[in-house]
Length: 193
Image (cartoon, one colour):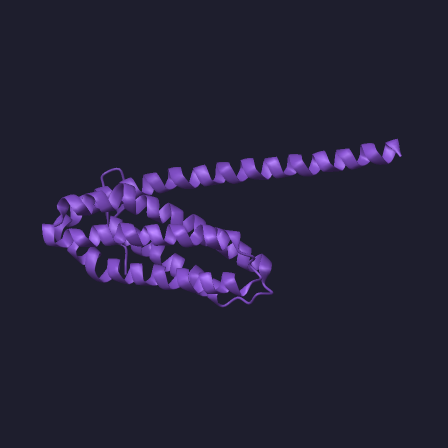
């Protein structure tokens, strides 16, 4: 699906919300397929893919729940509201699986099984959004509202991603300090001996 966009007088490009969400869907599906294709021995690759998937899903979920879903619920007809509630519950299921995967050993069959369940959940969710919710949203909201929501999504995504980078840097700093502390302790013990 091509991103629907327009250019304002400022020359900045605006992409509609649905096109942005579909781009995210494509990326997550590709990452989940890659994870599904790994073996228990590919621990480093699995850990890396899982972290990327987890970050993408958390960011995407926040964007939908904070920006897109409320606008959809407000614009949709009463009979279409069930799609809103179902989508939120599907996010909740993903939120249950992710910590279980994180707690699992990436070398285990349990991790592989949970990765498959996550992929099934996410692909089902994407299918429903793209075939049911998004077409209804496009009819109910119209081009201008979707472009405005797209701008909000882009801005919020930048904020969320910069927060992830800050947290990652902070975590790396703490890990570095812990390693240096252990090295210093070992050196003191060697000198004392």
